[in-house]
Image (cartoon, helix red, strand yellow):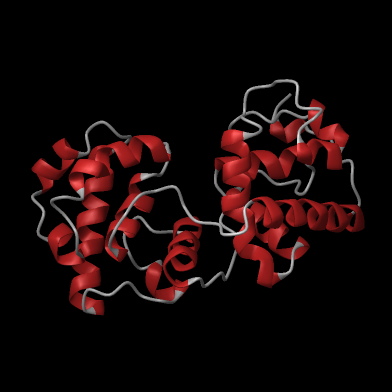
Length: 228
């Protein structure tokens, strides 16, 4: 059954109550939510987030393990040779497009922000390749500023499985989740769902009746949205 055909089983109030129970589990299980992308400098995080689009963190970390010995600051990335950079990241998805965006973002950060990563969404989304999801991840990870809930494939899948949204568009799912959960707890949602989706309840259909979140809402055991 596709995500578009998943039945809506809950009222708004039921979604609010379920979201709060799920949130309580995520806060208890993942109390210090951080990304699994590896980095040492702020711009390395920005680059890693950009490289991770439609690619696994594991693959990105494998590439950046070598890449980040050469490139550390916004200036380093800004001065990268495009063809060389494409070759250096060739094992991840869309290397040419990502190389173009990372280098351009490095130049913008260096030229307009003095090499410092901006602290507002309005400034971050000016960076090539940085949109709603990635800007919130960067702000949250670097500055613990959570102005929204970033939605990736794990957040999308679990939000649909637990009937927390009727949308499949990532930004609309973010807005739905933000309406269900207190702003002070938004920081637990993305990384919590990501870790739960990776290590507890992966995407392929399986028996998950005994999983912690499925016990909160058993109908999720029969809801398997397809990847978008």
